Image (cartoon, rainbow, N blue to C red):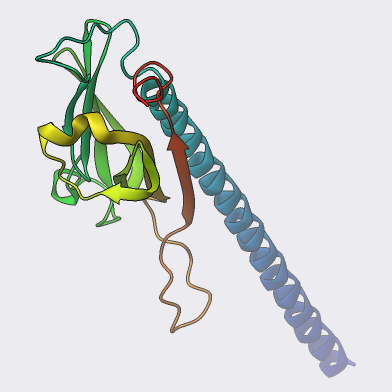
Length: 202
């Protein structure tokens, strides 16, 4: 009888251990799903914040700006990684930073995005890993201008494409030993036309 009780006790302990292991795995899976949800939510929030700011600025290029014969366009710089322009008396400058400037996060590809207004710089850490400007010719919207654009061609700029990639700062949990996907990603591409200058220049 004593041996039977011992076997029952060992069996109970084994079942209890298996149940505890299952509960721990369930909690870990739940925590991972929650973390993934909030990571994706933050990515989408950051993307929305960035694209709304960009769209507002791009659509206002040249608003309340007075053209002259010597200064016929509000565009000041137009490269793949920088776009600066006038909105009224204000100089707005968007600059995409280099990954080397962001050494405090595990993701080696994320970088700052700078929005400079009249010399005052706002540095944004939104998880941007790629952001590029592309410029289309105003009177030939299926053709683009190669960047960097020479100032003599600024008046030919029409719609502006902005391609943005945002990634999580932290690695995803590996599902398999050979899993090479390490970061959550979210893509968005916008095309904006300035109401006040580029459209009116047609």
